[in-house]
Image (cartoon, rainbow, N blue to C red; front, side):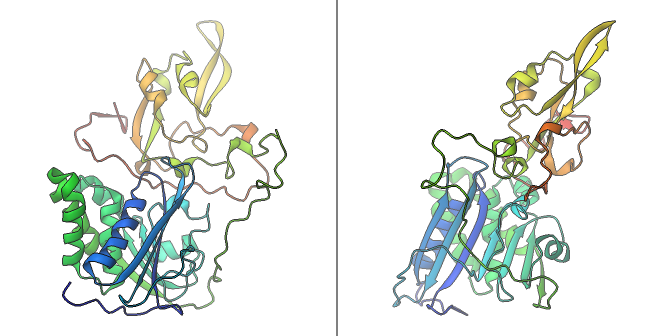
Length: 364
């Protein structure tokens, strides 16, 4: 840039701040790094970016923080972004399970990966206000043969309202093109479609929903007070008792008519989601497979790989919000649990989306 970009608004510290909320595997970490580089190298600003994540695996929560300031102003803090000017939600199912919208105000621009309308999103997220940008990043990524992060990067540039698209395109060419030159056109297409194909609506703070203040997570147990050798008291062995947010776009679909009740799916499943009940076959008493507990299924598809009769096939999660043969494990249902909502919106790989043979709504 020959001339540094002028930031349209800053906070009390003189920073323009962005926060990305995602799960591992969607590329939010790379997107955050690219936004930091965009400010420092392509927009003539001072910039800082870092990410926060736990086990560094697909499905675990990821946060990325980006700060921009005037070139002559130093960025003297490296704490999490509490009140972002732009909030990027890469995974819709995180909303309601984690406080991803904390710190949002009427001045925040929320970019969310969803096929819902801004009005629906406001109700679902209980937003106090702000400018909502809805982009179906999953659909665009599948059609463009790119990834969700490129589509979200384009939508974030659009939401900012002051970020030159040519600078973002040059960033993508320099960053992605060096490593994957054969995929640059697909990534640029996803970027441009994310910029152009989104719905926007502004909501004033009218008292419909209360503002949620940002605060650091404070668990009851920590390194100082966790009992030595204690057992995990959480149902389903997870804090939320819900693995739906860790799925990567696919779920196993059960076709009971093909099932021979061999139990291979149950032995392959790391989370024991298959529900068996005593029944009868050819005059003999057997344990029959009744279906899956999708609440605890993380979509690893190991069951599909081992099924000898194609009684389990791969389906796209978004196409099956209420899959047949969904059976909850009654022993793992808690009466009082904070996180019970299940959302169906995630990410799929960018290979061979439209060349798979489909059967009964699933992929064989």
